[in-house]
Image 1 (cartoon, rainbow, N blue to C red):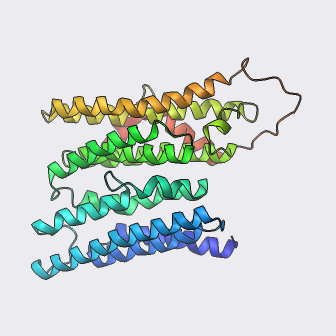
Image 2 (image 1 turned 30 degrees about the horizontal axis):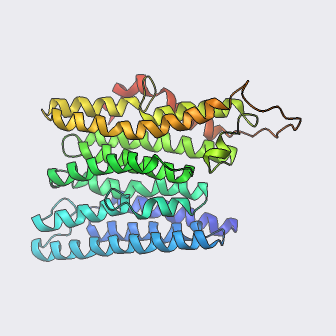
Length: 344
């Protein structure tokens, strides 16, 4: 892609998200979401492949439907209340706006577009779609969290955790695995949204850090399949080792970064006297743990001395400082969790 066009698209993404973050008005928030949607489509189709075109079309149709629902609900709400304020919503339109925002995020059962879209686009665009594109809808959802129906959030959260784990089990494509991982993590955030929005925000920030570290690592070794990642040890042993640890962090194993949001969410659910919900959530998360451990196991099987002897010297991969920074954060934030929570 032309560098000038790429800069314009990235600048548009930044402007769209910033506009939504700064707005107190539904119309301005909607405009920011639309700028975001339109700016990422050229990045999806920068490689003119039929699968990329299909992914961009699916993404556009889904996001356009969600945006239309947001605009219609916000207009009807303004007609009823006389206000366009984001935090002032009347009863029937809170549910429709929440559902539209969850559709933009890719929460189950409105998740069907996400795995297919991420599978059809490059890793760099998948990184933007999995992290940056979720900031604006999640911010709006946080702002209306006190008005959202608790039963809806719990249902969507549990469904997302189950589907995020179940859908990733039989996958061989790393991008689809990351898509289902994203669905599962968003389920944890939505589950606790009504009880503790600050904890949702904390979980969201850690999700962005761990997902970015995973995508940067995959981009460094140019792997999109499990079979490719299993033969990456000769390219960069240190990167493959940290990649395994990032996978375990995404799985939520202690003492890595991913353990802290899960621990805090379970403690918060127990504090709210919802022990059954906490138990079901922990059991549902075992599905996701299985496919993370399976990926790690595939990589461990190819470590020395199990790698086949070869006379070919593979070219080593250059690791960027950004990859190193994100990986370090994705592994070592757990001891600093109380400090970050106090800041939030």
